[in-house]
Length: 150
Image 1 (cartoon, rainbow, N blue to C red):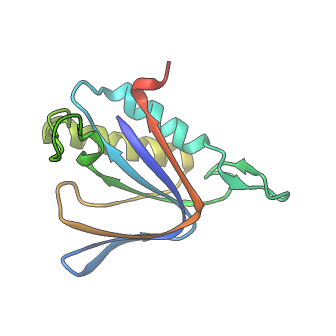
Image 2 (spheres, helix red, strand yellow):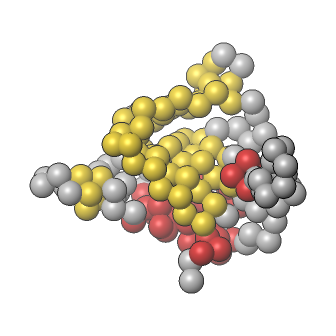
């Protein structure tokens, strides 16, 4: 699994012109599930997300986690994170997991993150045409791939 975490002042998902979910200060997380990913990947990424120290402390040093900062999380599934661009100019999504694997692992990531943070994780809708808006704070953008954990 691969995630892109953006520290935000606010973020939202709109579907068919209607606001679906929104958060204030916290994380906007794009979640990509690849073939071969397993539950341990989702749990490991949720743990990393909950403890990642990218919020400023009283000295202006990035030393606080999403929990310490009392931040919110919006997580959106995004199969394009697994795009291969090695050949040609059209990305290949052959490595992206199918719906039957991706949905349960995305949901596990979100529910595990809720357990760890004690807060609801706002979500997009898997497979929907979503418009995502955000104000990146910093900007701070971190990419984490569970296949690189060792």
